[in-house]
Image (cartoon, rainbow, N blue to C red; front, side, top):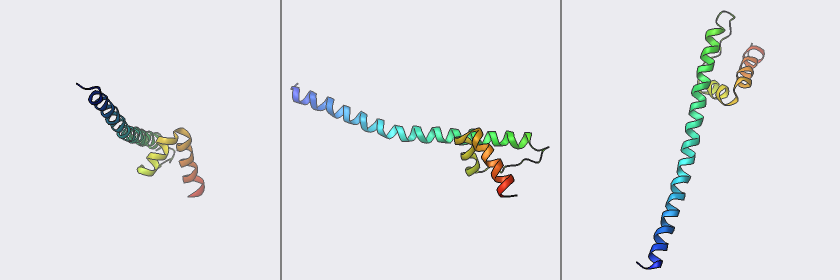
Length: 88
């Protein structure tokens, strides 16, 4: 086989792998974000279950789940402050 053909095949394979790798990264990022949102919803569920006797209730929806999942405990604290101080 001629060297030019081999170099072209290897170059094409490298470009193809770079393009496939570029498309996998956003899908991976979206997957990680969805996992965080689900974990945030679970944390809000636990908070609502534990806080039922204290009258603590934060609705579980996409926005509150995303806030608590992405920000973690400070996000849950912010949701509690928003609910009790601003909305009360």
